[in-house]
Image (cartoon, rainbow, N blue to C red):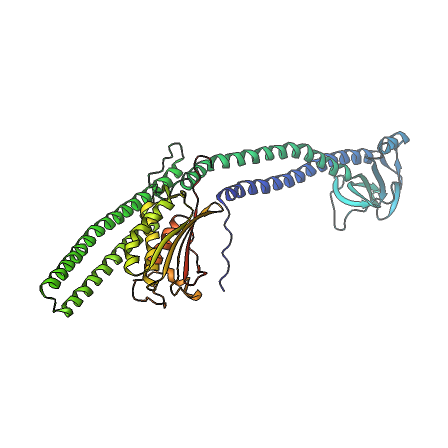
Length: 474
């Protein structure tokens, strides 16, 4: 089992996808980068503040004998601790663990971190549950005989820098989001405007009749659409040439085939008449001439049917016009009466007396009705009845040809519409298998249907259901 073909995106969706999706990805990447840069700048500002604070605190610590003297008045402590949301934590210690002043829980410098004496270095840590940024520096202390190091640490919460970065990102991101939205709307409008010539070309092609092969005119379209229209026009020119060639062939064939066959039939009839008068004792020759006449008549019928089939095919073109199907059908039935009488059959017309307006091709519809009546006459035995029944029904014209012949088995009713198919009923060999194929092709060209059913009185009922033409608002 072959895999189903993937659904193709429309050109509009592909353009919007390729234009808007990269734009969204770039916007998200720019927002992430802006957040990281803002956070780095905020940390840089905080680091400078912490560096100044740690240097100021280091200046207040002075060696005194074997110890330290910390000149850190209460007022200075209050300045550092006055903002609870942006509190500065500090600690002065003499490593390894000699706490002197400040916050005892201050995070220690990472293992392996070292910096020159008097140089400030930074690291991140946790003070309880609080994430902090710490500035620290080592100061020389002790005596020349016993040198020591003093560690001065100043820390600040990292929440402030993160909040500052988020605020900056929001202040920058909201206008950028509005700009992206406006750009997306402009892209959508631009794509729609750019594809409008294609929509116009599609409507032009869709609104055309299949018989309209005139060139497509798109004057204001872009070069790409004009190129496409030019290619379509080239194809239309080739199709028009092919259709014209086919029509010329049909006309030439009609003239070249009908005329000799008609002449041969006339000559055969004259020869039969002369021989019947001059040599009545030659029945064999007369029978042979009758067979020739029958063959010629059958050839004429086949040629006419082939030409009718060629005219009925879609490639031949079809000009529809308002006409009265009831009047046309009665004319065809009147023409078929002599043949029915010769076959010993009763041919009549019943049903609605008024006009039955339809939109159609008079010549093809005449051929359709003639083929239905011809089939009925050919397959109905002598003494049989054939009825052409006309009516309007639910917005349709209903034309039925009923006969009491052998009918068509239900299993063959679909196949009898195939070309050159000849059924198994009585009368096989009388036709060439084109009559119902022509009927079906003509019906399709007129948007009609040809269902076959059993005639209640026995035989076949061939029904033509064709849309009723609406005229004068009726």
